[in-house]
Image (cartoon, rainbow, N blue to C red; front, side, top):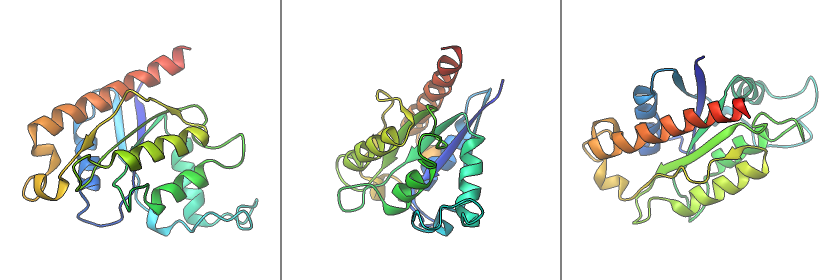
Amino acid sequence: MSVRILALVGSLRAGSHNRQLAEAAVKLAPEGAEVVLYEGLADVPFYNEDIDVEGGVPDAAAKLREAAQGADAFLLFSPEYNGTIPAVLKNAIDWLSRPYGAGAFGGKPVAVIGTAFGQYGGVWAQDDTRKAVGIAGGKVIEDIKLSIPGSVTRFAETHPVDDAEVAAQLTEVVARLHGNVGEATAA
């Protein structure tokens, strides 16, 4: 059985180091796992219950929900913006938390990782992301963590997939998330 892991990146910048980390996860996925990098978070409007009505859900939000419903697990990449989660990632979590009680996260395994310029690699944002996605219904795998500090210098001339230490850590993250899907299915 192939496991589909949906990757959501909290940075919209084309050259984002978190996006590069997600691209590396796609390449390093173990056999039996497919990491799919979701494109289109920039197009999803801010969550608003007035537009989240049957027949009226904006196309971009409906596409996000459809992709999430088809996922077996989630891998969220969060940089740190002003000490917390980026708005684009929080917005995606908000859309995927609805409809209440039947959101797309629905007890599926979720891991939150990322990189940031600061010396702690964005841990505050990643902790806030874990909290939000857990409340939204995801089964956050608390012991899967990867916070890479100094992204601007570390990845200035090296893509994360070409950084042996990062590639090994990322491979382990994806393999462990993949394993948690199997545990959730067996339970």
